[in-house]
Every structure is written in structure tokens, then in C-alpha cells.
Length: 114
Length: 112
Image 1 (cartoon, each protein chain N blue to C red):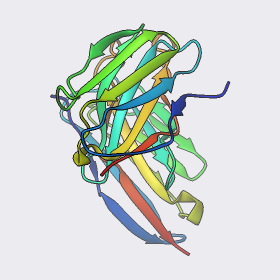
Image 2: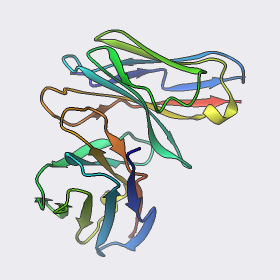
Image 3: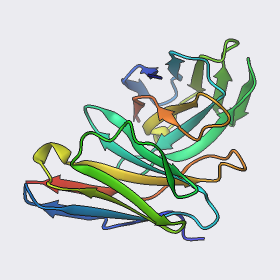
């Protein structure tokens, strides 16, 4: 298995632009997580899905952030409009809740908003 | 809400010295997991602890889960330069929820 796949790996965008981050979870995993990592705040859980349904989005910073999971093999995290304070590494992770296993992380997307 | 606190934030040790990071939760946990993130990398799972008072070992790494299931520790004996990275604990409040809350992490630097 290729693991959790995220794209792009790096994104540089101007303030005010829309940014879309993509994630393909490991096949067979039914839980998917979006995390944001910064030096100041560490690893923050933004949202997680179970069986494609958003279960907890209490970590989503504000209305500028939205996440979707249209099917079991794809999820997006969108920021519109982006701001410099959104600069961070965004990780997607997946796991199988049925097997009570660990979370597998993707390589992350390093977002820079200038 | 549930919080997982981890100390220290940073630790610099001489190669061969021991290292310990501590994790405390504001609520009782169903289980706790430990991850390691190398510089520039992504978190990678190390181990999961489920039972009260559980102790697990992986070579030079010893993991403990407190009796009250609210705290945990990771101890590395005789650190090596390959141990460099950030160590995260992550707790789940209930076995029925997938929500995994990470501590802030402890970044370990090892001087050769």
C-alpha cells in the first residue's frame, strides 16, 4: 500500500486566494483526520470523519475552513480566503476504527500564505 | 474540552544520557498512543497502551500508562543520535470515538 497520500506537498499562495488540500486515505480505513501543525500551537486536530461523515469539526478555526469527504478514498480541506496566519503544515491521517489501530499520517502539505 | 499536556517542550541531552517525556490528560483515557516525528517528517506510530498501569518496552524505549489512565511516560535509555525528533503522546477518551488528541510534543536533541 502507498500509505496516505497528500497533495500538493508544498503550496505558496497569496493572501485572499483559495487553497485546496487533498488527501487519499489508506484503502480500507474508515476514519480520516485533518491536523494542522505549527511551532506555536503544535499538532491540532481540525476535523475528523468516520465512514465519510464529519463527526467532530470543533477544531476548525473559522468559517474560512471547510472539509469534505465525498467518498471513502478522497477528502479535501479548503481555505477561502487564505490568510498569512494559515501558514502551517497540514497533515491528513487515516485509521481503521473497527480494528482500533493507530493513525497513519501522510507526508503533509506545507502551506505558505504570503 | 479534553486536553493532553506534555512536558518538557524541549530536551537537549548528551549521547548516552537518558531521556523522559511525560504526558498528562485532563480526563481519563481509553488508551494512549505514542508517535515520533523526525525533523521534516510526519508522525509515525510507536506504540499503544490500553491497560491501567501497563508497561511496554521497545529496545531502549519504555512506555508506561498510569494507574488512573490519565498520564503516561516515555523513557529512552542511553540516547543515540538516531533518537532525535519530536515525541508525541495522543489520547483517546473513549474506545468508541476515533478522536485522537495530541500533546504538544517533546523535541529531543542529542549531542554526539
